[in-house]
Image (tube, rainbow, N blue to C red):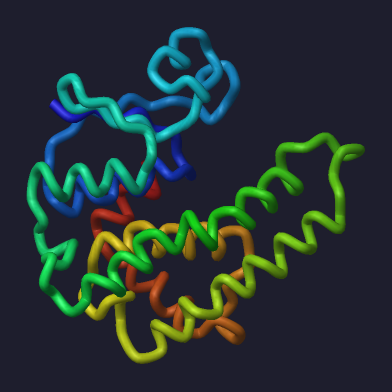
Length: 203
């Protein structure tokens, strides 16, 4: 049985979203997003840095969300969520699958730290503003890509689970508005209408 270590409003949402899209059974191990749970001695045996998600499948243990998604699609079934090796859409898929962690999530991480996790005296306004500018710039290519299609490679794919979730995170932080990012805004609404996504974000 697949087991997912999960905390709400984290990258672990991506894993539940995919499992729900594929109708794969799983056991949910819920954690609070707090040092008491994530930094406990017991949990550090599962993930040495005390983070989520962690994915277990028998004796397989993986804790990078992109790697987990790739593993699931490779071992279980594609379900149309990843192009074949000869598909014309494969290069686009690979770009947008990895774009979220390479481009969008680094400034989001900095914004989260500066806004919510640092003590007031340790916050640096310049660092926050720099991250905000970078986030806006990283969203522009996504908005352009979506100007001519509903999803990042045309049909819904695991690239939307990765980068779509990052766009959703940016929206929840207030950086995706209808005027500046109309196509991302419409895209997020499409994602929210998916039953699997709705379940994952509301766990």
